[in-house]
Length: 523
Image 1 (cartoon, rainbow, N blue to C red):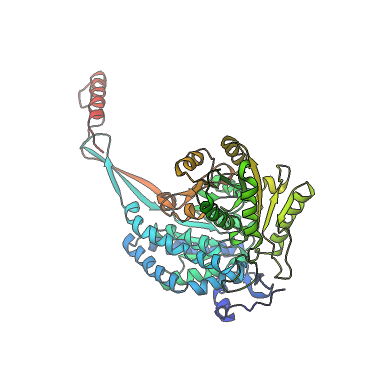
Image 2: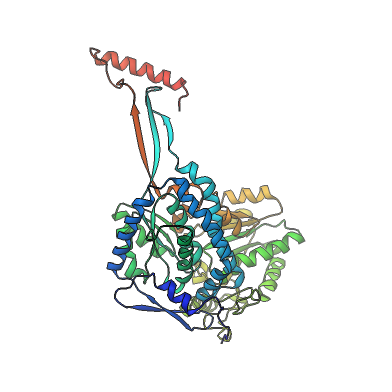
């Protein structure tokens, strides 16, 4: 059992200050624990429906004033927040590790996401939110202006795997667009987003604009959705369907990033140096954040002609990964988020082995390291009748598969209900891009596992099929939080027949005008 001492920055005073902003009028609490040890850190208040309604009421009052701020003034808050988030990154990483159990590298990298999002939208938001004047139906005599107005109050339901990144990064463009936000973090990982919100307020974000409510999804979700003007959710496909249905009944929009069974296709033309690069990227793509990355790789397809060579290289690296509980950069793999999730991952491995799969490395829980540790695991012989063959495992487990032709590899990669992320590896970029174009996925990385797609903040990132609706990042990642108002101006009454003009004459004039307007390039 781990005897790791939690970081000195994570004081009882800090913890109490963070959870004090969570409304919980019933007095009910949830024991938030340090994952490495199972030690209770703090009692997290659980919000009642009345608490949630009150949070939305306060957020709406703050939003009405915030929306009146000029865009430039709103962005100045995030310029200051960018500096504060970076200056406090180490404390944030400590909180992320304490509550989620991930290794130090992943915790530090998670702290980088909100500043990256801020940097991107500081440049793009002024242009995206500026009114855009266009031509109206009658050239020179009419105009139509596209005006983006905030939705109002955005409800965000953030997952436990990247609580700081999703809790803040999904909220930042919503706030920049003039909205308020009510976020529901997972009970297990509420500390880091609470800390991040305190930094935004230190940077000048008005109090009350960014609210936090806590509780189990079924208890909190319905009231949150029913009071929101838009919902952003990251989590399982099953929960996403429930949220999407309720949002639809309320006639509000939603963005859902859901599950995945993400494939990697390795072509047969990698040289020795490229194989080394592939191994390192694939190991991160599979085992990064202990396999708890939405875009992480769960299936690897290897060419039959090189299967043994590539399999052995990958398994050798996976079996040597350093796993452990530490607040330094020693371990390459940390803990799973909870003992319940450890049991789920273990059940997938046990089911696969019972049905004939082979464990090439790993396959066991590690209670000697901490309550929720599980070894990096590589399986061979996984089939569609196994849980690990069709259902998202969301842990440090991957299946290796053979293929004979590229067409077969693409067919196997697409043989899933999901379509969130994929990866293609080749010594020939053009060849890899041809394969990528045929893979049914919202993100496809060429010669990388997942980071390049996710870190490309200028391009929308989302899922297809059962992996979601909508996208974060890119222009869409901000504009989805706005409604479009069309302000149309007619300078002179020319629409319709002139006084005394019969309708036959008007029709001839109108049709002639349409031909003329086709040649005029008036925007």
